Image (cartoon, rainbow, N blue to C red; front, top):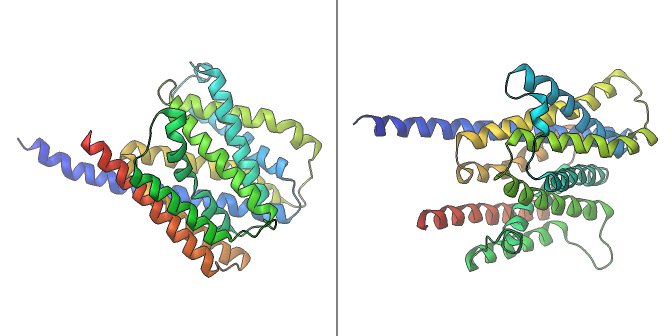
Length: 303
């Protein structure tokens, strides 16, 4: 009879661990973007940085997966949905390239605010693409979120900065990437999906990286380039662990804490301070996203 009571504290501890892992993953992702922004300011081409981000993580995956006895390398190719894996992986590569292009001119807090729209776009597109239609409450939250981005970006007629356009394209690619990830989860193991992401990113980016290659000026620049894949790899591993310990409804709201890490690093490294409009817009988008998670939890509880 004591087992149900023992399970509750265990579940609570798992949730706390999951939240901690999620917050730590966001720190790594924020460091990744900060490093990319520093390197673009050093005139390292975006194609080169994007390729390094994928190839380093690809090598780490090939080394550690068999070394840890998780899966044979040959099994990483085994997918039931090859075409969809290639589409998803291309979307991930596009997300990285557009994000790095946006970081050339936008502040870190600006890019992460635009990325916060992705879960709202996922909820909006899940109906026509996956048959997961939202109710009027979640639709209202999505509209509020889009209003928030208009406040944060304040686009003028015919005067939208290229960085904002790149960031929006990256956000849209990221939203489609998440939808494809959700669909593929029914067919392939996570490691297979991760493998194809790194494999396609490495393969597609190689020609552009070679033709635009600029040799880093010093060892620090080399280290920073290599760290792109390391930061991304550790961040995604922690991300997967977090979602393995607790349900998405318990972890997802903490994604919006990345604004704090991005704004903090933006101030420490570049001296950037978020303006009032960005803060208000980010708050509105975050509130809309958290409400979406809450409504999904309520809906699932009623089913």
